[in-house]
Image (cartoon, rainbow, N blue to C red; front, side, top):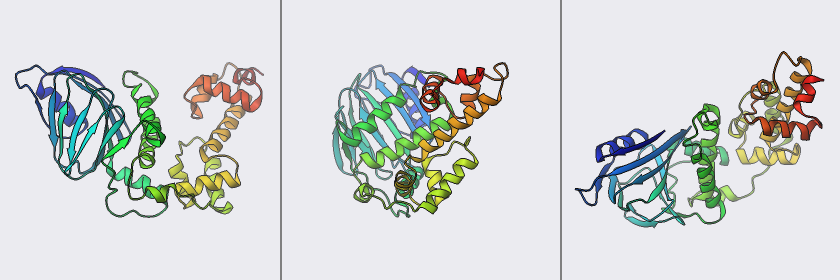
Length: 316
């Protein structure tokens, strides 16, 4: 969704619709307020690029149901949350937890900010899935995060990749299963990128799932390869943490869980192409039926796996 508006009321309404109720005022009350707002919703994550045509101040009370990260793409942003002041810029993001009033004391004219809202319950569920145990209490994310290196840089790059679909009507992010999956990846990425009390445990190597446990996930994939499995769902089927399942697959299967799903789907697509006549189906129909949204990548993966193009198989 892309909007260009003028006026404080319209800006407040858009922020309320996609994020939270806010108090918003221009630093110069008599100045006009051009406002650029580009947003998308990817499952549990809402992502938007905001730019004000005049310097503003903003505040809101508890987020309650969400965590929030602001990543300036240009300029600086001065924020205060629970008594901690952070000056954010393109090298440093500011992170807000669900509780405590937030003040944005300085958001300069023309400064563009990537705003990320992450569902609180979904983030906690993702952490529990990774650790394989319940997590009690708030995560207590660190109030600032350097974004020029390491996991945080990778996370911001993922967000930028998502944001490239802000103006792409009909893009992959407009498809609910893909949007949900990308949103979940953004949740998982933040858990590795931001400082919090569970990070040390999260970074420790996980004990691999046993072969019998891994087999439960393998059986689920083989029974329903058309299903849009996530690693989290497969870990739940196996009854282990995501990290234990991934390590178990690496050790006992030699492939990551989703890589195995992809390989099985390629085989299913090949079987369908071999069984059909060239006037009965198209390669694109078969590819999409088996979860391959990008036809060129499907063709490349198919040729690497079977030594011929999907079209050659269909016409043979």
